[in-house]
Image (tube, rainbow, N blue to C red; front, side):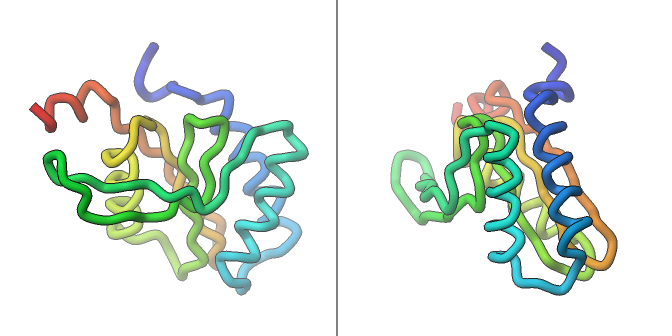
Length: 133
């Protein structure tokens, strides 16, 4: 399967839910409001969601930190939610690092700013294994 299309059917549903929330709420709320609203829409689409799931980060074999994924959908897509003026490279790097730290390969960065913005990122496990070697 082409890496750019991995889990595309799920990401399309997530993006549909994202626009549903954005169109109803607009911008200006805290990220938690959007997270809670997005969870409602995702569940309407019969998607399995885990919120604020702890993910351990390792350096070599040593645990060095932990982060909490905003939402993980169907155990295959990480969603990172922002409510910022615009998406920044730091937001994209954060999502890529989350993908590096897990076995998950697809992530969506969803911004509920003045204009709706999203980015889809793929980081293949093949590359993760090369980094670890």
